[in-house]
Image (cartoon, rainbow, N blue to C red):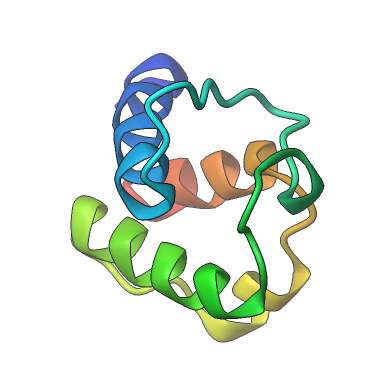
Length: 80
């Protein structure tokens, strides 16, 4: 799995969760950059990401993620 392929899949997940086809993620994207990304939607997002990539993200990592780049790093490390 490449970083690029993770971003392709994540863009689709984010667009679906937030119902916004204009979302284009990058390493620096945070909740402040996406309208409606609040704590409730964060839970929905994590569940959707876990379903897309077929693994559970440890709660400790969910809490400490600061941006999408860190989410991608976690996905890549879990996918090995």
